[in-house]
Length: 157
Image 1 (cartoon, helix red, strand yellow):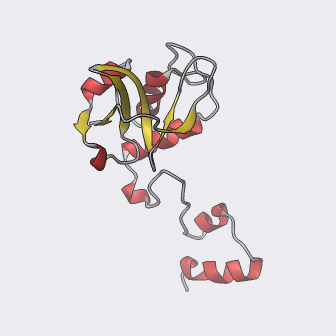
Image 2: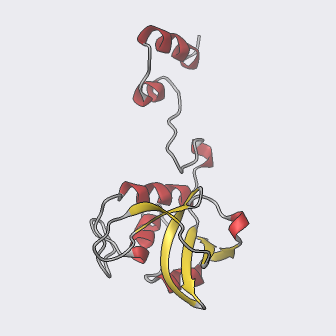
């Protein structure tokens, strides 16, 4: 009998099983907005997890972490933690990504907010129309629904 086959009997005896116990006997742990299969984890989904881990960090203009962030500072920090280099500003980041259509977006892609041709904000797509981002002065890093159709998407190369 393998460790995986013992999981159901453990759950029956204990009534429930923690994520750590599941992992200890070979199960998997699911994190919302991140691929469940470790083999499917990409730098983008790992960067998404980094951004989510900064929930509640205060916004500060020009800040690049690890405790305070502005919008592009959060995306730059998150991708740097997984070995991907991004330039400093939202507009520069847009110019360094592979531009994709909304229908092709995936968790971990960047979402660029624009007015005309001016990119003014960036966040990391979390799925289901939501992003992780550092919104503005007086706010904190948080998950929020995309509030406008004036967005472009970019995939970090």
